[in-house]
Length: 124
Image (tube, rainbow, N blue to C red):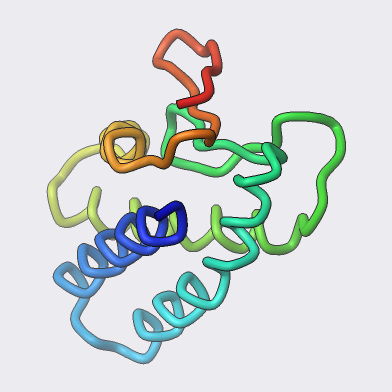
């Protein structure tokens, strides 16, 4: 179930990107990278190493940063998606990320960490 929730979250983000920018090679490469990272991200979330912050990005929960390239790559791709959505909607990409964080929380899996708007963290 945890894996299904993350897959739904990732796929909905990728669908939004495709709707905004077509099926260019760049968009396809973002989708491919995001899908390929799902198992590693799920593993990190299951271990409590990372959580979803209130800005729509993955964040480490401690000073230990396993699989740093996976988390950095995911956050970079999410930023690209948020930028594309922001450009299309005429809003700030930070707002897009905050909205996305709320969606991720609503679909998030029990046992995973999430950041509230006030900056405090909780385990769902």
